[in-house]
Image (cartoon, rainbow, N blue to C red):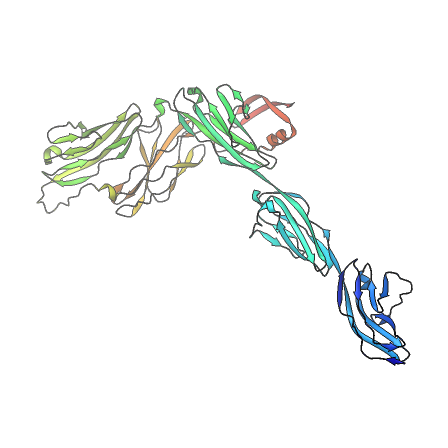
Length: 542
């Protein structure tokens, strides 16, 4: 008998996927008689008599069909004949399990600004790697707002509409890969992209108010008049008011044939969807002649001390509708053009060959029109040029004055006050800014434009003590050591009304009504006292 020592083929470490066929090769040593081949698993001889799944083939190879995780282990080929026993090196068989989803991402709906978590619990051997991605049509991951949690879930923070789409979890290992996905739907409450603006309009004209809002689901937009129970949805006409829908999803309210009764009406635009609601207001201000502000003096004269026999020019520029007329007074007496006195077309007063007795005094520029008048005064002092005790000074050059502030905007109002804010000019002038001067006008309340505050340090100001049912206008001027700037643009009219500060409306019932298909019709409204109203309504189905 003969039995060589060396195996012709040794088994090698092998790995296969679950369910596949594993083949561990073994070429036993040559011998006479031919050796018998056996296999050990984890140190124990394998009994293959009762299984067809595991067989020895091709003279020594071990074939394992439909591999199972229980087949995982250490395998050794054993060859025997009468001479002895030979054992191969040990080979490891590893059964890999393809990734599988234990709990995958689910479709979900979230509110904008909140967070959403997509789960991706997976199994497999070896443990699969997990990768998250968006579908090709969804765009890139919102980097900076996504986090992979310890359990491999995906969390998206501060969700926005742009995050809507399909999120895919992909798990892979050596045995294969698997994917699962969930769709994120984002709902957001309405927000205005275009708000109606308070407008001044002439009698008989037409007004257009535009309103547009975004949100998901798309919000329903409707109009109303504060204090009136009628709601105007898209493409509706009631009286002199009509609504139309724009191509980009907005809505326009047109108010035709404006009359005096429309003055002060508060137009309300509201937007509502299943997530929330918003509303915004604008006021119709009819340009009644009596209510228009008087002329506004843009540039007026300054106090001056000049030598006799010199020349002075005192400015007076004013704006207004209709165009104002400029006139001058010295100590209350009209100034008449002459050989030495000239009043230009725009209102500048030039006096040549100045005389101390004839020309010294208080000069007042008056800008007047049908809407009223405004005045601006300054003193002119004249002295001999040789007088050593006199410090002469002329009016400051325009470029040394600060720039005009931005148009004052009303940011808050109550029953008796209004807060305005404005943007400062980048032009400071030839000296540091000292502050701002606030001027106010209200018909039958002020005598023309009245200065109500000086040297205000901030770019906001609150005027209290205002009267209800009165329309106010504001302008702001900047001041430095050289003088006052030109005025800002006149503010939009501010009409003080009772309880005008209560701007928020709880629209939950309106939202529920719209969603349920029911409508509430207001049948009567009775005033109980100055702060209470009793309402009567009926519910009708549409």
